[in-house]
Image 1 (tube, rainbow, N blue to C red):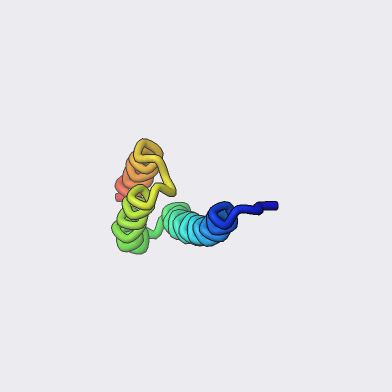
Image 2: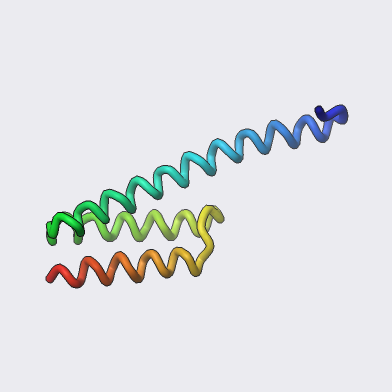
Length: 87
């Protein structure tokens, strides 16, 4: 257990940040799964509508350092490729 004032503050900060990161990661995964469901159901219109907000969210998660930029690029590339294949 922390004894120094600064260490106690650091623990409080880490708890808040961990909660925010978990929330953001969960939101990202939910959006990606919604898009994947639309792709699997071969619903072209819903997939196209869902693609732009999902890509936007992926970019936001890169800025918040929830995702690595290369991972984000891979996700965006694959999702876009799958949506375009529905045409």
